[in-house]
Length: 461
Image 1 (cartoon, rainbow, N blue to C red):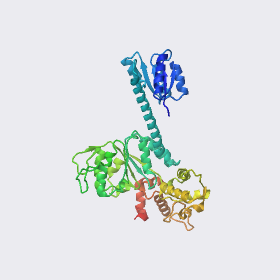
Image 2 (cartoon, one colour):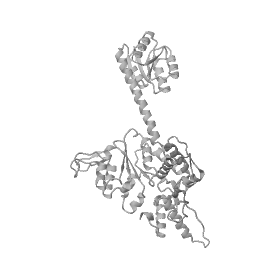
Image 3 (cartoon, one colour):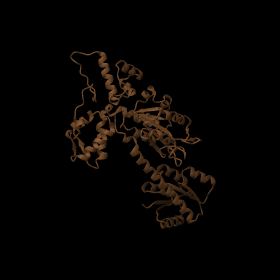
Image 4 (spheres, helix red, strand yellow):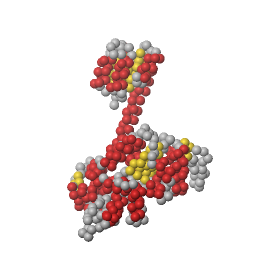
């Protein structure tokens, strides 16, 4: 696309010279003999660069510059004048001019200023485009749902994004913890800096310290060169420590010291390295429970959980499932217009979704790949989704219904059943179960002991 330059000067001969020289370099050139005419052209035409004289009758170049910066801030401005003073140059630059050129100037001098101004505009345009793409990929619009629980998550993301506070994101597997971490990063002042994620559960224990903090050559067998760790790699961006509950106890002390002092020592190194990255941690485990069991340091927990964000499971927000289904049908359908029948949607809403959003997405993708109809019907769904949920109290119960038996039951039996259901809905996360029951966590733990309920899900013991 040809770049367009507007020349505003009351000197007709200079306008002709500039128009000729700029057109010869391949630019499309517009001209105006006054500030008023230039402003009118700017409102009617696409202009990439304005070259304006300072001294013009009526609206002068400084007034035109200020109006352009307000009305069309993406347009670069070069100011030229025969009455150059340091004070005027400073005033023009403060008002937003890209360059200040004093008459008389030669052709090469102005040509260089023009190329620099247009290069800056191109970079600013590319940066804005990249930011839009990042926001589209990692923005809040990718966290689909309208439930009150999710709206609370959105509010927390907005509040915490521009701070440097450590964030602990909790939630079952598949709820979108990394997506929330990226949303925080890309809405923060660190958005143009690195986002580095490390999965503490996926790296062997003996290599995890080196992965986080780096190592020096010869620190251990196989360390043939210095290696930069993830803390250093993140720079002044964001470091996500995923599956933080799997961090070995012996490494937790080193992480705590790093967070407190904002520095660390590489493996095999004698000095310290400062870091500026913001740290976000994530886990699908009950970290408070891990602290109570002695598997996670309490002081590290409080250092990480300055701002806790809990992601609800799909079982806690079944009304969001139609929105998620529509989102995945559009994102994965390759342009196909596929809808879900009422019966199939009810079955999708009734399924427990232990894998949460990730499991739902995988099932929608499979239905699209295997199906050739524009309607997904109940019989198209996998058997485990079509089958009604087990009655409350069974090991596979996904919802909660209560039938009062003819022979009656005690209040304690009813209380035990309700606690069990809250634990199932929260994936046996005691903190979340206590929230569902609207009681303090310590009271829930007391009741669990009273009824001899296990601290972990029966199928994980």
